[in-house]
Image 1 (cartoon, rainbow, N blue to C red):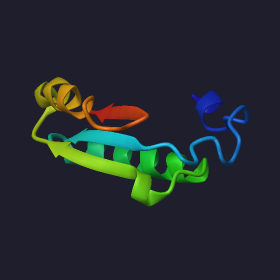
Image 2: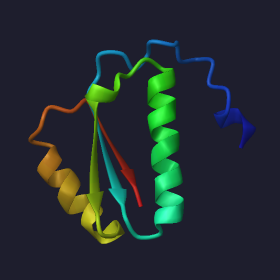
Image 3: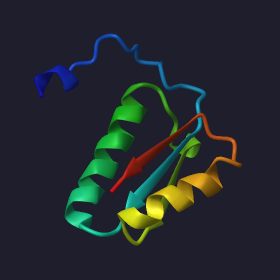
Length: 83
């Protein structure tokens, strides 16, 4: 797992200027909230501004695909699912 802690291939501005959607399940909130915090920290560390990160909460993992399908009409460069 340590290979994920230091990703030196990505520069400090690798995520700058991109728009991200994060779809996160409320089920198992102890886990998914920690995952969301990790995603936000990693994106910020690589230059993403908080205004370019939109978070969408869904009840559980079954709602993730439907929400992602609706978000594909929006202008996001990446959609991250946490469930």
